[in-house]
Length: 175
Picture 1 (cartoon, rainbow, N blue to C red):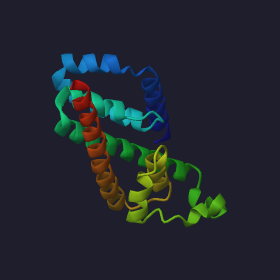
Picture 2 (cartoon, rainbow, N blue to C red):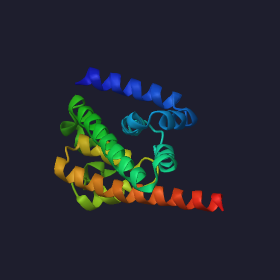
Picture 3 (spheres, rainbow, N blue to C red):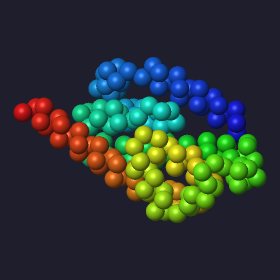
Picture 4 (spheres, helix red, strand yellow):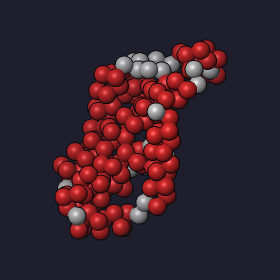
């Protein structure tokens, strides 16, 4: 499990450093059918890096409109979060986390990681919040059902905000 994970992470980092929004936009215009799959893969690859996926959402918004942009953002970001969960689970397994949990600084071992409220609110923290939740959920072995429904709920709300915020900006620019 570790070797495929490392290969995936290396591929994601290389992709993130070479990601070009202009080339991606051209590709989407020329390859309509495969564009959806490429966007979802891009969400997953960017999801495991520190590079945000919002530019993809805005490209899809310009390409296919708000409904498809929300749908692809939710699917892509949820799959990316699942990949982060798997990475977190691997980190926890490799490091024998359960044995070392009590030694965490700042009483991090007492965080209510299994709480749906915590999972939803921590995902709203800007920057590293969603990644922290996903990795920590994997490390702390949060139940899959709880993790998935909270991730899906947060991704739906987040996608709606990004898409309709972008849609409003596009509308203002066109005036």
